[in-house]
Image (cartoon, rainbow, N blue to C red; front, side, top):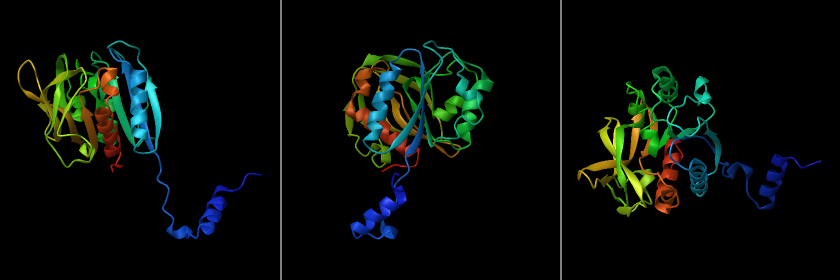
Length: 251
């Protein structure tokens, strides 16, 4: 018969001279849902590198949903369940379905976040549902974007110093080759944490930000196109910290 875990812990505490009442509680793992798939990116590799980066900071139990194929139009089965987000502490959106435009379908997603479910939004999530006429998804993201500049090595400047997600982020960082998304609108509840300058029009655009979506924490970045970015330690660290911040477990 295997020993009872609780009795084993009690015996260990007594052996070490530690009062069980004073022992630090074991933190529960963060329950994270990663929704990924669609056009244009190596999602399996990105998922692995994201999980590896977060594991350096905290214990996370991941559920990965990769549905909808590799095209630009899909309505994945997950969202048809009204309780799709209920089991999770945070939802990471890294999907890319630009031409899906069904308003009722989109609101099945945003309704869960409007009810308080935190989120992280990465790269092509900003162009997902781009064809929709409603703004629900864009308000949730905290930014409106419909196009991007060419791939280049963009200089990223930190504009906020004291946010928990930016603890290890340098004053200036240069990306591997990635795409700069043109941000048409930073929504009123969103706050830019870092910006990059367009090599085409000379304007600064938010590339890392946070958003308050009806009380739900949202962390976002427009970078993450190629695997080179996902292998960059600065990038994966800030995204990992964004996952923990959104889930209320920031360090």
